[in-house]
Image (cartoon, rainbow, N blue to C red; front, side, top):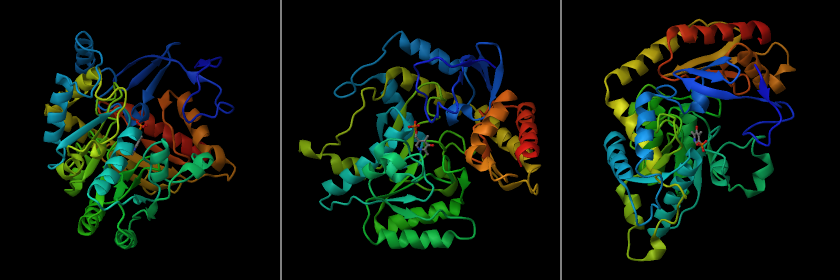
Length: 420
Ligand SMILES: *Cc1c(COP(=O)(O)O)cnc(C)c1O
């Protein structure tokens, strides 16, 4: 494995003093990445959770080629284009009924920033200004200042702490202690906050923490009763990751505002949407310019990204797609099942296509760098896995086969012998 070391590139979430090099990838296909030197990596985390059907899915690549010959980019205020119009109509059809408006942006963080701004604008325009945000403990919503504020505080954002706004944290609904969270939410709602923001069913960067659809439904219900906006951050969970197209479906929940990004183009191009109910749009609708929703991104609704998203939605219309996702869920269950009852691991879990398990470390000393050590261990075996500390998770593209997953789980067993 040859690494690029001399480079002006400053990489994300990277301590260059500990990770001086990066693997230079030349091409990708299905579940596999191929480096310039010919070495191959099984992409067991879908390239940071974005690739859904597989790398370089032909229909999406073709849609990108076709669209790029017609229209590359156009200002989206006062102008529109067919891919954005068609995609918005399709999204309204397939997302939970009632999410009738689509605001385009270009990353998950931005889609959540937009959601928070929509919530505050809604209350201000209704003549009842509310600014407090409720958020789940261990949540992650992005790395911009607003989304860091809503997310868990940790070493990752300690430097920026003075810039972050205060939010009310609702304890994570740990299994068996759900009522404590619901009670805390109920109490927090009495102070008339603007909105609750949650990752439905599974908290991703917070450690792949799973909670039940019943709890999600209860949280939504409490917000409805107290007239607090409910924001579902489906940036990671959207587009099949939890086994259904959207996680909220499993709880029969319709959020007031929903954020989608990672899988929306199948992972091929950056795009995000924030969708909302009509009362949020209506609160901004007026002949008074000061009540408008003041947000834009240079690349709102980029036509090529919208065309990729439309191709992705067409793939979802084929029966084989939900079948493939269901098959992966079953394969993932088989793969992770062997670790249930293995005392080198705790909290062996699965939600839809995602599995996760926490390695008990043999030596305390491993704890500080265990994530990096494990990542290197897996990379050396031709696997792209990127544990969150001692939490190893497998989040593969939907085309991944049982044989490929066998490679992953065999390496996890080997890692347990080495580090566990
Ligand atoms: C990744 C993620 C984000 C941020 O998305 P970016 O595209 O990285 O800005 C927000 N929310 C959740 C739940 C995520 O997993």
